[in-house]
Length: 140
Ligand code: TYD
Image 1 (cartoon, rainbow, N blue to C red):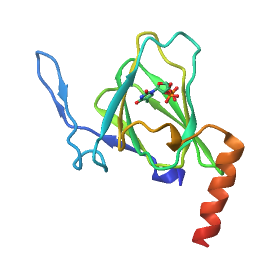
Image 2 (cartoon, protein in one colour; image 1 turned 135 degrees about the vertical axis):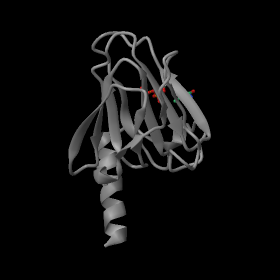
Image 3 (tube, rainbow, N blue to C red; image 1 turned 60 degrees about the vertical axis):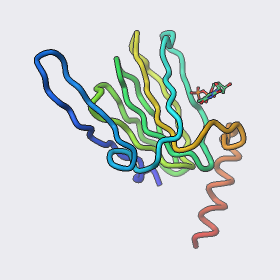
């Protein structure tokens, strides 16, 4: 499942006046964007996330600065560093993740496939592992 998380390159329009990148739903991101939010002013050493979503798919872009996205599918762990605004990380549902190692003044932009729903969160790692095993059992 962790292999389904992927870096997606975004268009980059070079310009001496400053570069420009953009995202179109369904073209650069493999879902219809229903929500956008951003994380900023993160104090040094702080960690965001620490959960999975049952249904939500997300796309992360480091609009400014840098940070690490730590991905975990219950079997493998992978750290992806985001540090440029012309690529992003796609994360499907049912992937445990946290964000760490924020450089000062970093801005993390997140595009999401669904409106905010408290019920979609899995915040207990043990419960996440159980749910993942349940999905595996259904598929086999
Ligand atoms: P949360 O998703 O837990 O933050 P993190 O990025 O660390 O995982 O969200 C923190 C708080 O913000 C929580 O009380 C829910 C609220 N929130 C919204 O109201 N709408 C949103 O779109 C998001 C992402 C969070």
